[in-house]
Image (cartoon, rainbow, N blue to C red; front, side, top):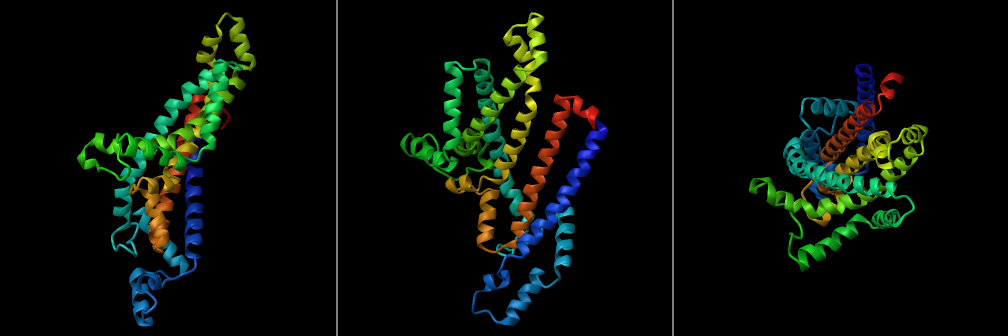
Length: 315
């Protein structure tokens, strides 16, 4: 197990190095001058040069890359060009919205998908299976932002159970804060739950057709006992993969939902920073999201080894 984990750690480190080079290169080649954008078209060349020097834009690409990476390793993400505040503070404030939102949505998705997928697989070809597959197909087809606006119309405007947008703040208590995140979390969770339920069903059906399941049935186990004792654990490998990908998506891909509900999260910060040509914020936030994706994939790899010990032997 230790050797398996070390190999995955090396892969994680290499992935982060490559990602940092790609992110820095892609952001730096974007046309436009942040200094000129900040000062406007009437700024003199001397003023632009002074601002570029203040922002650290006059160094070579390699110097700026090494300075950026070295700062991140020390926990210093630099200073925002637009807001003139440390990027680490901006990220920290918004991370306490995006991370709970992603975990909330992932929890809802898993709690919905697992029972639905298992129920459909255990009743293959019956009305319950057809109903679950029809609902999940609808969940996959409906865009989450459209569903988000529909929930705002029903639960915020008509029923007035929730606010239409904004974030109450953790200082007001856990319940008001989580209530502010409930509609966005549901909007994010339902499409993901539909995908996860379909994968859960498909994986379970494949596992139920394996020889060891037929052997277990021949030894006297009921279909239900064979499913819960043997099939479910062996069917979790593809499901864990999807859960890892979903968490990464929920962290990095919630920009539209955060804008629909006016949530000041990481996605909205990236959107605003791109509009303002605040390159240091864009680079830092995207790198942080890549780090989260890589760490989640590492955790999923370890979960593979826990679920299926054969993987530890092979590596």
